[in-house]
Image: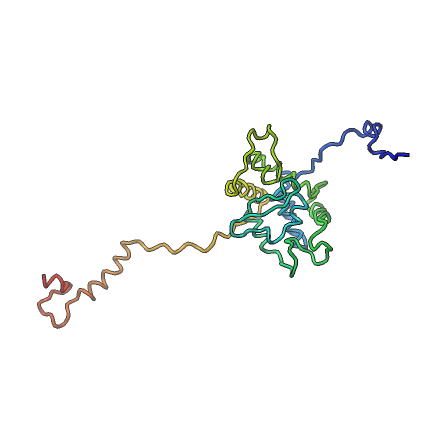
Length: 259
């Protein structure tokens, strides 16, 4: 006798209707409350993980599996290992770079979002942290995968090209979304991705100023003021008549006197 899953019978489908796509996304107006709650989580690793999840649009396990070797601080990139293309390279945006740079490195643990207690060596289930943050922010029904949907929907405020968003997220755009699928270089993706991150942080009222390197060198003083500072010294030193030159006028150069 063959067992039948009651959830897949015709009668059940007619009673319950077709499954609908999930619609849990962050609204623009909710970004400030969500970021504030997530940044206040007691675990800095969980806090960073959830923020990176939103700001990269990556899948939950793609970020969980991120390793230190996947971060290229020189060329500002992240290698994301996905289930479709195998791996993709996306920009390492300034705020995400700071979040990752502040995380601890556990000895002999390759994972960025490491956990000394978890069997896998990394965070295994972020739902508890997500739920705690959403309760604080009074946001209902938002899941970790909903952050990926949120990334896509929020980029529409900036009118980012669909192909750019798809490449960052690891989706191949449909023909209706982009007539010719173009694989964009990292520096071009960075222009758009940095803009997305900056806009989200602005909506969240986060005053973030990325480290732009050493301060600029002090500008030289105005040429005229420099000459005016030197003139009194010049007049009374190198051009002054020595004691054994009675025929030399005061302030006259010895070179001019001998011409």
